[in-house]
Length: 151
Image 1 (cartoon, rainbow, N blue to C red):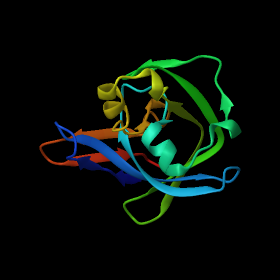
Image 2 (image 1 turned 45 degrees about the vertical axis):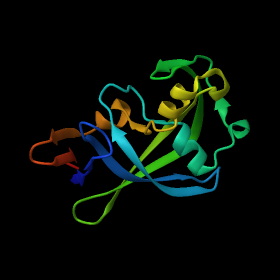
Image 3 (image 1 turned 135 degrees about the vertical axis):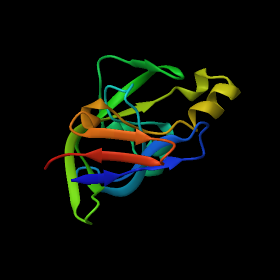
Image 4 (image 1 turned 90 degrees about the horizontal axis):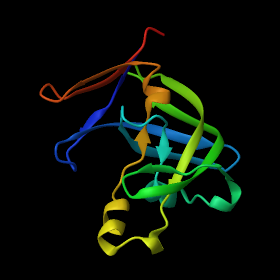
């Protein structure tokens, strides 16, 4: 099975991304997202910009006991327990992954204007919890972004 991604040229250098359909029955959400494929991220996470796009109300999500760190400092993390991400495969079929999806939000009021501008541009990430289930091929010169599995 092959799942092709794309190079997002909004970033310099261009970054590997993949289009997914995100669903949560409990939250009544079914929307497309573009995730940055990030081998440095241990877990797949929805960040501020996409949390707003999805209309997530954090009151309805379970808060993690620990905060996580990354660009923009420490952030509170929440879980979407019934999350599914659905990929379109090369042959037009769909491949589904169920996961406890993380949602990370920054405390904007504690950030400088420059930091807020950066944080609001951060993409959501496809992390190693999902990448590790595939062979990940990224060849920038050949413009290949590919998740591949024998299933």
